[in-house]
Image (cartoon, rainbow, N blue to C red):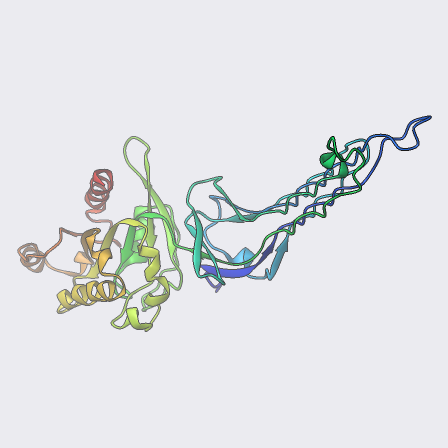
Length: 328
């Protein structure tokens, strides 16, 4: 199975500026005319650009260094050197870019087509025409170009989604995603089927679309690095609402809810300030008496009982998602 890559790091080198030149106008009977040495061109920038068709960073895993083109030297007749070509690196929406050495955030890339310069090209040096003055009519001075910026950067992806599906392994999140959206996650009757986040889209009656991320199952201790959850907990940070999916056919499923919420709290307590909806899944495995008993239970969060497999109450769940998202 292809590994989900949500973090990469490599070196970016912007182009050096082109050097300015020393040159003098040449004309008949004027062995040395006025200075006309042009400036060098700017070095190319290294630019990150959002491609909405990308969903992870595997296309960048092989990179160790990315370099932009140097600016070209100036020329006679006040000719400016050509600027170096910028280099563009495509990334998915939802990336945070950090300076690895300074442990500092450079910027975030969220929207389609958004760009961020992560290494600036060096300025071109001035040619001798720039230095002409009333007191120095024939300067023999020209500047070298400035060096381009060099940085070691980290690109960290945090998925952008309206709804984050969270819960223990085998709670039915992948089936729920499949039957709510057009996504096709791998589904099987054993824990940890989902080894990387899956994304899907659903629509309201007017054609507005909403995104759902299925986050790999959380087990007790996930916030401390157990199981798969710790690697993907960061992906719920940018969801608008959290849908905690639980298998209500399990005995003591309330403890599952408590366990998942506790792992989120241990990772980042502020995440519990998000809108949380409990999705009681697999009611198709219960009889009417059990379902009636369930509906009398009281929880700290709104609960909707569904069967992802049999598609029971999924329209009601969609409507709850839409109303919750639109209110934020």
